[in-house]
Structure formats: C-alpha cells, structure tokens
Image (cartoon, rainbow, N blue to C red):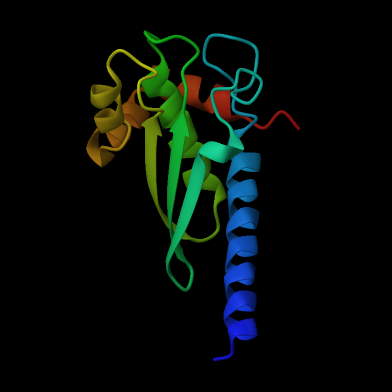
Length: 144
C-alpha cells in the first residue's frame, strides 16, 4: 500500500470518528438536568471533547463518555449517567458498548457511581422503578 493510500485511510478513519463523536454529542447534549431547567450541554456537564469512540469491527464501537457533575457531591450524578445511557441505547442505530463515567476527580464518590452506571443489573432495576423511569423519560424527552 502506498504512503498516500495509508494517509488517506487514516484521514478517512479520523473523519469518520469525528462524525460519530458529533452524532453522539448531538444525541446527549439536550438531555435536561434532573434538578435544573438547563440541558447537560448548557451546564457543561457533557462536552464533545469528553466523548471517545473506538471501532471494534465493521459496525461495532466502544463509546466512552465522561461527564462532570455541577458540584463534587451531586446527589443525582448516577441519574444523569442513567439518562445518558438510556438516551443513547434508544437512539444509536449501530452496535456499541457504552462506558460512561464521571470525569476523574469531579465527584466525592466517583468510583461507586461509575460502577453503578455501568452495571447492567442495576440499570435494569432502576428502569423498573416507576418514579426513576418517569424522571429519566422527562430528562431525555426531545425538546424539538
């Protein structure tokens, strides 16, 4: 393979990744904060630069999202992580594995919260709770 072809393939891959990151950001940026009237983007809880996507196979990806709570002791950080997960699971058309976490050093109990928001059984149990489900649905409802 010629050097130009390799550079072209790398550039295409980089462009594709950027497009996917923007797509994921567009899906999650308008999620409403559970307590405040603003969106996660407006509160700088979620930012495009904290979304990383790695391609595993043809149409399968690992999506890593870090978010920053508004305060280091935010009691709703787990709920925000749940909203991110549910919105993406409902919106993305391709196969993916999600890894959602708090930005390092931004929450007093970040390790415990990171475990909760990536545990399939806890996520399923949370979405069976009618009160939690209602809050999530309100937060992820498209404003458009």
